Length: 466
Image 1: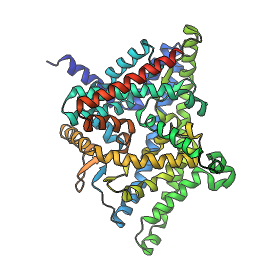
Image 2: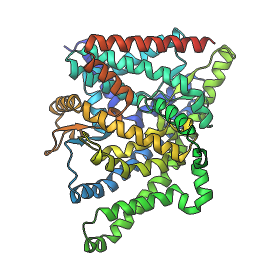
Image 3: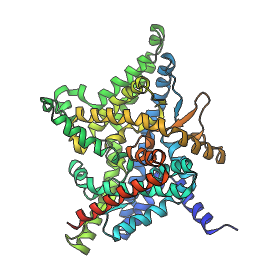
Image 4: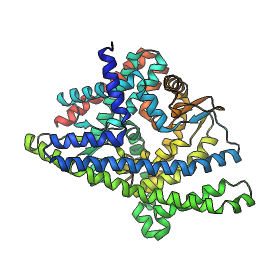
C-alpha cells in the first residue's frame, strides 16, 4: 500500500509532467475566477499564456535545431574539445524534478511563500510554478554533494527565500522599465542572480569619462543604422556568419550557400517572432493583473501592495535583450575555448541566453553596450560555475537516467566526462549556495547562508513596513 508521501509525490510528479504550457492555463483560470473575473475571460487569459509558452517553445526549439548542427560543425573543424557536455535546461529541469527534493518542491515552497506573506516579509506571490525547478535543481545538487536530503531541502528553501526578497527589491525598477508589467515581479533565481552584477557594472561604467556617449539603446540603433540596427537584420547576419564558419573550405562554402542563407533567415525569424510571442503573455496577463490590483485596493486601500510572481518569459522579447543575446552566442563559444580552466562546452544552453538580461536591462536602462558588457562578465563567470558544479550535476543526472532510461535528455553522450547547463548552474545564487556548503563545510556554510537570508528577510520586512 502506498504511503501518503508516495501519493503526494505521484500527484506533484503528474502536475509537473504537464509542463508550463498546460500548468499555467490551469493556474491562471483558477486564479482569475477566484479574483472575480468571469470564467470565460479567465479561461481565455490562461489559454493565451499557454499558447505563449507553446510558441516560445517552438521558437527556441527552432533556434536550437538550426544553430546546433552549424555550431557542432564549427567545433569539429577547429577541434574545440571540452569535457563537460551541455545538456541544456530540459535536462536540468528533469534532474531537478525527478529527485526527492523536486517531488516535494512545489508544496514546500508554496508553504514558505505563504508564511512569509503572513509575517509581512514579502510582497511577492510566486505563481510561476514551472520554474520552481530552479529551486529543486540546487536542492538536488546539494543532496548529491552531502548525501543528505535535509541539506537538499535546506538549499532549495534558502534559494527560494533569497529570490523572493530580490523580487520585492527589484519590482519597482522592473515595472518602471517594462510599463506593461504593473503589479508583476520576477521571482526566478537565474534572472535575479545577475541583478547585483548589473547594478555594480553599470555604476562602474558611468564613472568612465566619455562612456555616456555610448548610450545606445535598441531604438537608438534603429534610428542610427536603420534596417542594419534591427534585431531581424542582425539575426540574419549572425546566422549567415556562423554558417560560413561551419564550412572548412571554399568548395564546402559554395555547396552550402543555400543552407547558410536559410540559417540566416531562421535566426532572423527567431529575433522577429519572439516579441510577437511575448505579446500573447502580456495580453493574457493583463486581466489577472488588473483584477489583482482592484482586489488589493478594495481590501487594503493603499496600505498593502502585493506582486504576482511571474515567468521572465513575459519580457524576453525586448529589442535590447534580443540584440545582446544574439551577439553573445558566438562570443560565449569563444570564451568557452579561451578561458583557462573552463571545461564546459555550451551548445543547447545558448537558447536560454535571452533570460540573462531580463533583470539586467532595468539597471542598464536598455543600453546595448552596458548590457553586453554585463553579459560578458556574467557568462564568463557562469562557465566556471558550471564546470565546478558538474561533478554533482552529473551524479544527479546518472541517478535520474538509471531510474528513467527513456528520458534521453539526461543521458550524457560518449566522449564526455560530465554534464552541465548554463541554466541554472551558471546562476550566481546557485553557485554561492553550492560554494558555501562545499568549501566552508556543511554546517559552517549553512550558518553563513542562514545568517545572510535572515538579514535579507528582516531588511525586506522593514522596507515593507515603511
